[in-house]
Amino acid sequence: MTLRPDLSIIAATVQPRTRVLDIGCGDGALMAALRDRHGCDARGLELDARDVAAAMGRGLSVVQGDADIDLADYPDNSFDYAILSQTLQTTRRPDWVLDQLLRIGRRAFVSFPNFAHWRVRASLLFGGRMPVTRLLPVEWYATPNIHHVTVDDFRAFLKTRGIVVEGCWFLSGDQRTGSAMANLFAEHAVFLLRRAE
Figure 1 (cartoon, helix red, strand yellow):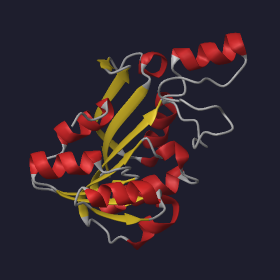
Figure 2 (tube, one colour; figure 1 turned 90 degrees about the horizontal axis):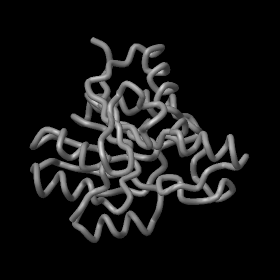
Figure 3 (cartoon, helix red, strand yellow; figure 1 turned 180 degrees about the vertical axis):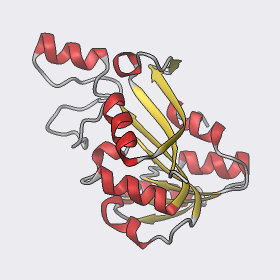
Figure 4 (cartoon, helix red, strand yellow; figure 1 turned 45 degrees about the horizontal axis):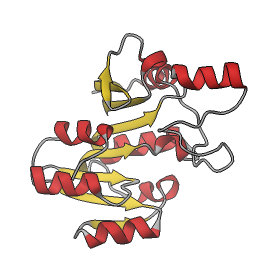
C-alpha cells in the first residue's frame, strides 16, 4: 500500500510500538501502516461514515466523531502521538483543535496544504479566482477548507503559543523541498510538535 507523501513522512517518523490517535483518519491507510510496519496501537476518529466503515474493514479501531467537538472527551497524555493530516484547515476552531492535540498526545503531527504556494498566488493574481489544484481539487463553493493557512501563518501561530517544533517537512508535488522558501514553494507542510517543558 502506497501512502500519500505527507503520510509517508509521518509513518517514517513515528516510533515503533507507540500509541497513536489519527484524527480525521479517512479510510485508515496511515493507521494500517503504523500497525503493520511498526506495531503501533493505532486508533482513529473520523467524521465520514463510509471512511469509518472502510477503516473498520481493515480491522482498525475507529470511531465516528467530530474533531471540533469530540477531542475534549480524550484524557490528557493518553497517546504518544496525535495526528491531524490535511484536516486542520477544515475545522471550525483550529486553535482549539491544536490545543487538544497537544493535550491528548505527547507529540502531534499536523499537515496542511499551503495556501501561499506560488500557484495559488498566481491563480488569484492573474486569474482572480480561487485555485483548483491537485491538493485543492474542488471549486471554492464545494471545498471543506474553511481556514486558509500558510506556512508562515502556522509558524507565527506556533511561536505565539510557545509550541516547540521538533521537525518540519515541506513538499512540492510528491518531492521534499527546502524550508527556507517554504511559504512560496511548498504545496504541503508537515510539522511535528510538542508542548514547551
